Image (cartoon, rainbow, N blue to C red; front, side, top):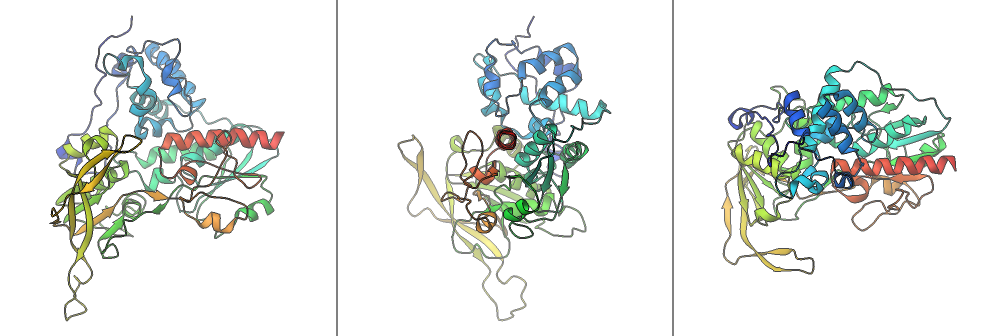
Amino acid sequence: MANMDLKRHEMPTQLPEVRAHNFFEVALGYDEATAISEADRCLNCKHMPCVNGCPVNIHIPEFIAKIREGDFEAAYQIINKTSSLPAVCGRVCPQENQCEKYCVRGIKGESVGIGRLERFVADWHNEHSCSSPTVAEKNGHRVAVVGSGPSGLTCAGDLAKLGYDVTVFEALHAAGGVLVYGIPEFRLPKAIVQKEVDNLVAMGVDLQTNVVIGKTLTVDELFERGYEAVFIGSGAGLPNFMGIPGESLKGVYSANEFLTRSNLMKAYRDDPVTPVMKGGRVAVVGGGNVAMDAARSALRLGAEKVYIVYRRSMDELPARREEVEHAMEEGIEFMLLTNPVEILGYENTEDRRDARNGTVCGMKCIRMELGEPDERGRRSPVPIADSEFVLDVETVIMSIGTSPNPLIKMTTEGLETNKRGGIIVEEESGATTKAGVFAGGDAVTGAATVISAMGAGKTAAAAIHKYLTK
């Protein structure tokens, strides 16, 4: 009989006063008994609405049924049929807006903790399984994948399972894309990402780092080298700025730069290769998940005070509720309905060697209020007259979105992009305007979720298989 408790089992976490000073994972995961009890809350619905909410169509009731039986390895194998990164997705996917949003248990209570169960199963498999991935027989076709983020890894994995000779080209020195440079250790341990990358290599995928497609090699040169199709999953790593005075001052970072220095370059160590701010007062401009990651990282790097500055209200804040709650518990202050208008720097002194010259000393802001709803029902923020004030900070982190890097477009003839820089594709296949080239993830949509990028990688892999075997 199903467990009819209205509430899901809480996720154990580090205490806020402890975790705010370390980079260890915040959420500790379910144990076996808790996972089985949570799985008992699933009604195993005939029409499986939760599956329709999953971009990669994981067979959710099936894997949860195996957890209920205590067969955790079988549960993992069910997930693995459609998802290449279950340990990642179980941690960072916004399940509340996807699979869990459609869970029937959510009508009169809380939905089943699908993401928490996925994480449990993946962690259990990684801890207990000694089996190696199956290496498919090669089919004689070669495919290049540009970028080793979630869309690229998914596309490469699906093609490798079909016997393709796949090479993944990564611009950075480590594979994983946004999973390693963008998401902090306390949300997604890098050992988990490396495990997923190692699995792909064990399946026969060739991984080449420090290769910038569009600079080291062009897409056309990949075809000249014998690749029959190319998948572009290069992400959206070009940061946006507001265009306000003072953004070029020392102490102003894009969230991408700040998180890359912290996550990939290990700036939190005592002797970092690439340093970043430590201490002082920090303002993070923006309200998405990246803003939460930057703010919580700044706190762990020793900031005295961290502010989230967001021009709309809490109701419009786009970050996951769980991340917002964790940030509040850790002492981060939310300055809502507030917008920066200028970043202030120390005035030049007669001594040009003065270390303060050109350094942030504050941020001028203005209070906002929400105007009338537009045709989509969204209320735009409107400045309140004579409400300007100065926020006393030494570091400003801009987290207002990113765009795809234009380098590939600039060096690839026949590849069309939209006005935002996203590569234009056919939605059903991921095919671009250039024959043999497919694309997906943030390179197409701009910054989005890990699971949606994975879904695009799966779509493109199926389309590439059809393209090369027609």
